[in-house]
Image (tube, rainbow, N blue to C red; front, side, top):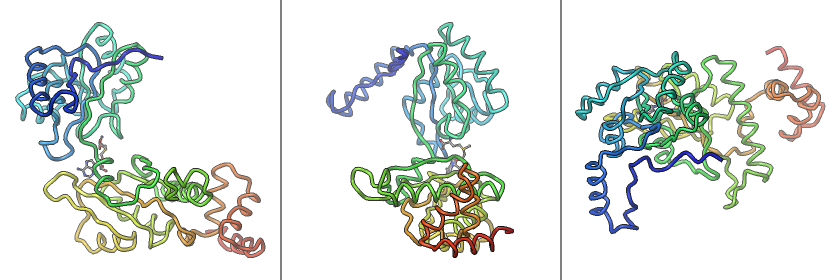
Length: 334
Ligand code: SAM
């Protein structure tokens, strides 16, 4: 077990333990005056739209570290400038992640304090950050999360979807249609197994809903993605598209996938940053629009033998063997 860790000199007592907001503020001011930040790696969340979502601790850390490793130094310069922070920056992005992580860890081992930020939100969540954390952990360097804005959690908590057993975050859906369909088909299968079997999907509360499924999606692919969700899960499946979170034009499109798709299709253009959430409950009717052949293909792609896959699909759909066989033959070429 690794021992590296701790509060990174940014330890603030809990209001309940210490007499409330005044004490919290006093502790924060004392921390400011001390100006001591423990050596280590700080993963600092930055706003996803609204600059007020930058936390007090995040600002202090950005001010006090030796340098800030940024996904895009120009983007972070705007944030630092806004808050009058002059800490030197260094680039740390997808294309130099491994090399830069090794360099920075050498500095960390020597006692440096380094913050990592992405362009927006929480580093390491569909953003650079993971590589340097693993390297730091391997080198025995302390790693401190400095939490704050994140699009997944913001979308989820305001979505209104029944969370049942929680949520599953998948990052971005594949850009290519075939791969996207396969991912969605696999997901539907897993959700059915979890929710339908009563083994793992019913949760302690016995609510039976599989976790809400959360994806990041680009605006130019959102309609295609919704089309695939509709084809795989059926037009009645509940979804939420959370747009422009924390920004001026923040919007939640809630409804069935058919309704949300129709709403977005009717717009002149689909713009802004978006999170796509799928309700976790799949009823027996969901996914009927997936052909038997497609369902068999998805199982085979997951390593199930073809004959067994056909048997399972027939069983799941309550079809007789010969009916399922005929359906399968019909859909094979498609
Ligand atoms: N690390 C970030 C986080 O913690 O949320 C996510 C970075 S990822 C490269 C960018 C994607 O996050 C966008 O394409 C969008 O799907 C989602 N996203 C980021 N900001 C958002 C916002 N304000 N509203 C809705 N979605 C957002």
